[in-house]
Image (cartoon, rainbow, N blue to C red; front, side):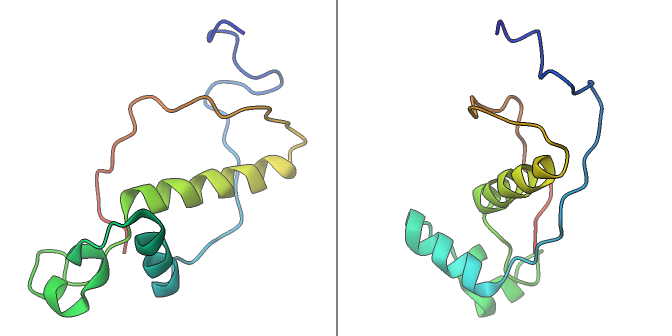
Length: 98
């Protein structure tokens, strides 16, 4: 595949609906432990109350990881098969996820 052929059976702009998923405090703590990212915005409820966010926010990469899993679950309902995850272009975390 040369990068321009796309995925057979999928049109550009086509949308799929995944199951819902709640991000819990346990998810955030386990992700912090796994990655070593214990930034107070993610792990200290008292600290973050004094910030513009007002409450703890999830790690950007945690939300990206969960989105990847939800995308996989959505693909199961469509019959699409993905052989490899090669990367992402232009990923931006534009708003907090709390």
